[in-house]
Image 1 (tube, one colour):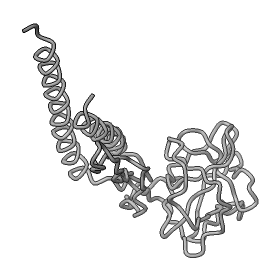
Image 2 (cartoon, rainbow, N blue to C red):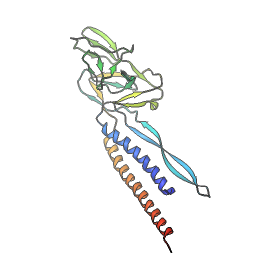
Image 3 (cartoon, helix red, strand yellow):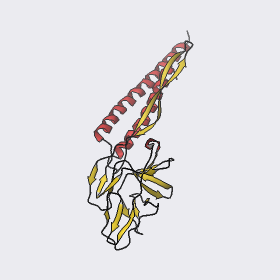
Image 4 (cartoon, helix red, strand yellow):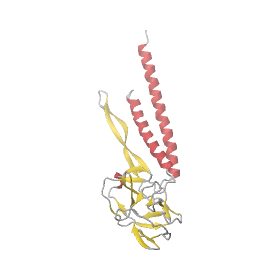
Length: 240
């Protein structure tokens, strides 16, 4: 493959990654607490030929998450909780501790508060939050304290991170981090509200259309360059 084809291929591979990320954003437009992602691109210069001329290749170096909160939607469900300000709920499953802004909680068979995917929601002591049988009057104050008709039963643990962009997406609106979290200083919660996805549907769909067109253009360039090479080979090897 010639340099032209290699550059076009690097561009096409970067476009494919961006298509995958954009498709995931679109698929999660209705996922509570979902934060959209976008790739980061860089220019990689390579010297070619005897003249030392530099050619720019496209390299995708990672992704950046949109940390802006999604819209807060009223649901009236006492187990739907939204976070106002920076912060994450702390949850635990078989893979360990993780973090989420998706406050669509429910009670499992044992009365533990869990996420929609079944991860256990933890309190300030890193213990499960349990609603006793028969307790139905669940009220949650802005500081995250959970009360029932029998009094206070616990308080949500809300944490934040210095470098949120270093967090790893685990799926199901769960995030992991190697950084030790600190208690969220300015976060508060609202009961009966749910943070929606921060994906802007019109923007992402328009981006998808543009990416598909660019991908097709790059593919056509690679095909044209391949045909040119084949023609050159046939011409040079033709018997005189």
